Structures are given as structure tokens and as C-alpha cells.
Image 1: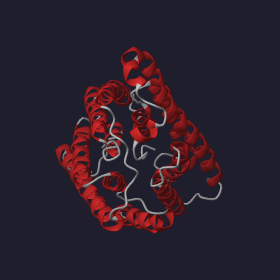
Image 2: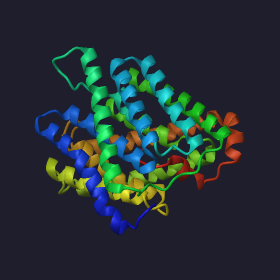
Image 3: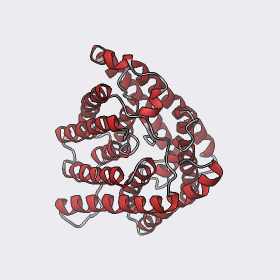
Image 4: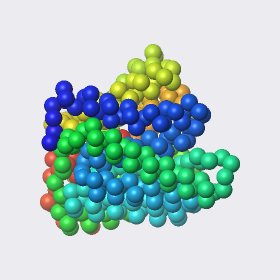
Length: 342
């Protein structure tokens, strides 16, 4: 069931606020890395629960917990990064055959951040202890996000995408495994950090089982990101304190979630709102430089990721031609799912 925006807005605000309370507490104690991992898991639980039932949501959280542990354990290893991301992206493609692309959308995206920039949440412990702690944080925060969302939103759900035809789902899985896995190798080898995660995330979002739909997703993402970047520049003139950035960023992310509850909203419109929201949230701690630095990095890696997705599809078009014949441009948003691959 999808309710009106009037009823959805306060509930979305609660869903975002309650899981954020532990993250704010971690930040207050100076545990920025812990806060970031917690929010990644919480968002996975929130999106999966809004997109499906308990079982797929649990599967998404567990899968991300495993991927997070493997990503941290293989820090700096390009071959490990390629294997982890190729597997995660490929599995997400296969799940689209069951109409679960929205439910598992945060799994490969979250894995991308863990692989590109493995977090160190425990400074005075062994590498194994840090791996275990990251996995537990993701599992606990994901469960917390599921619990809050299931309680507050009840039967309110994102628009459910149609299952991808099995042949197209298999093609999509192979494409994602090859392209995302290959890109992950370079991200780890070049130590691109957070920017590399954005690059991988963009490829995961734009690559579809057909050149036309890939172009549609890449173009819409690029358009929304560019306009969102302009908005960030305008906001940076007066939104320049951490508390203000967190507040405004949270409001914008809440608005983007509400937009995804409305099936009439185009993907580029979602990106227009989500881009400044995430840039503000990411830039609040100052770890990546000024707000303008974060915005420029996000814009650059997003455009590069969109271009790489299109180039990869161009090279693989003989393989994808049959799948492309049955995929229309309007299916791109449905296949994409929740659209939180911002």
C-alpha cells in the first residue's frame, strides 16, 4: 500500500531519525567510522523493509554483513575486491528475476563502500577483531532499521518493480559481475577511497540488460547529479556548519525517500534531491575536505561511472542485443528499484 505524501512525510522523518540516534551518539564520542558503518547498515534495513517483506530484508542485511566482513578482511587487495564486488553485483542482478531488485539494492552499494574504503572501527584491536566488529555493526544496525521501519511504516511500501525476465536477469547478472568486478580491481589498486565507492555505485545503478536502458539510467543520473551539484554550491554559501549540514542533508534525504514512494516521479528528479542530501551528510564531518570538495568529487566520479557503464555496454552489445530487444525505456526505473543508489 502506498499512502499520500501528506501521510508519508512524518513517518519517513521518524524512520530516518530513530536509526540515526545511535549514529549521532557515536559521532559525539568521536567515533566517526562507527557512525558511518552504522548508518550504512541502517539504510540497508530501511530500504529493504520498505521494498519487500521480512525475509528478503533479512537476506539483504545478512548479505551486506558478510560482504562488509570480507571487504574489511581483504583491505587493499585488488583481486579480493574484484571477487567480492563481482559476486555482490552479480547476485543483485539475479535477484531481479524475482522482483527483489529494490529489496537488495543497498547490498552491492554498501559492499562498494566497504571494499573501496574499509573502515577501522576498533583502533586497539587485531585485524580479525575489527572485521568481526564491522560485521556485527552492520547486522545490528540493519536489524534496527528493519524494526523501526516495519513498526512505523507498517504496510507502506515503495512501488514494487516487475520481475525482470529470467534471460534478461541472467544477462544483467553477468554484465554487473564483469563490469563492477573489473572496476573494483582498479578502485582498490589505485586506492580511490570514497570516490571509488561512488564510481562503483554509479556503475551498479546504470548498467541494465540493454544499451538503451543503460543510456537512459546513465543520462538521468548524470542530469540529476549535475543539477544537484549546482544546488550544493548554492547551499554552501550559508549551510557551512556540521550541525546545519546534517539537518539539511537529513531533510533532503527524507524528501528523496518520499519521492520514491511516488511512482510518477522520474529517477532524475530523485537524484536532484538525493545528491545535495548525501553530499551534505558526507561532508558534515569534514573528513573529505570542504563541502565544495565533496560535491566536486561526487560529481566527477558519478560522471565517470556513468561513462564507464555506457562504454562497457558498447563493448558487450553483441552479447546483450537479445536481452535489449525485450526491455523498454520505461522499464529502466522499475528494474532500478528503490533508486537509493545515489
